[in-house]
Length: 112
Image (tube, rainbow, N blue to C red; front, top):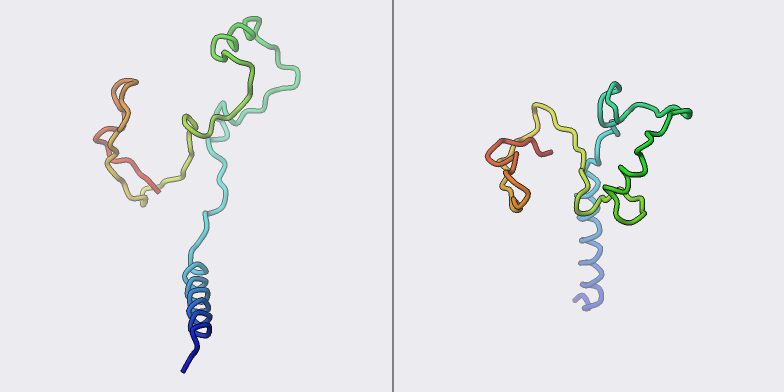
């Protein structure tokens, strides 16, 4: 007859072995693909001698109330995913529309 301690150790070992087997078959994300085309404005190098617009300080002040630099990756960040013609599509339901008409409502959206 097995002791309680032995049964617990066998159960823990089974969970570790079976859990490791299922995790080892999962694939991670694919290779990193740089977003945006090479010709995109987001991929252009800014020359070291680029001139600053004379109204630059006023433009920054208009959009930034307090001096800070952040990517805002929490509430308003924009994630980038790669989808191709084989990616399944889903109809998106917009839950917050206080900013106007939801541009995705009713359209099939590829979601990886």
